[in-house]
Length: 213
Image (cartoon, rainbow, N blue to C red; front, top):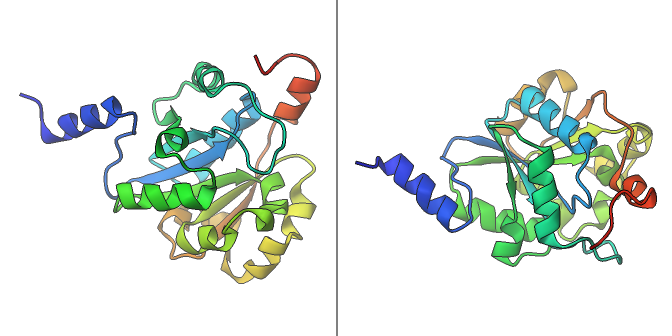
């Protein structure tokens, strides 16, 4: 006989949505992953440990509204991400395409409604914090979910001087408090300096190691 938990898990996987239990601390790493690389892997492993997360989802987006260039097909990017990131607590998801959302704030609204009781943490590299104030409804993101920022080479100073960092400076947790982020009352964010590979999707595409087809 299938237990209620296993039934819920199977039902969730059948409709393409991950199974998440109330009380879980789940990190969300969004992006085009065009292509995924070891920098994404390092961010994920560091976030799992430092933020005390139970699970993590890579949210492979249909497209980035801030970028004019179209990415490779969603199917190809998801397949590449699954090949690169193989970890029992990290799942690759095309949930934004299934939800039909285009912006992070919109995706978070749907996820919080679908998974009541789950403690989501939005994760991003420090390079994204630099222009975070340009994201649609960026204040709503900070006001509704904790945000974990992981430093990439060369982005530390500009990120800390960004408009978002200045406006919400009083809500920043010290790096020594990173394990408290997922359970913190919002707004709350934490900036971590972690050793990371100095690579990017842009560089990989420029070398010709990844194409849109």
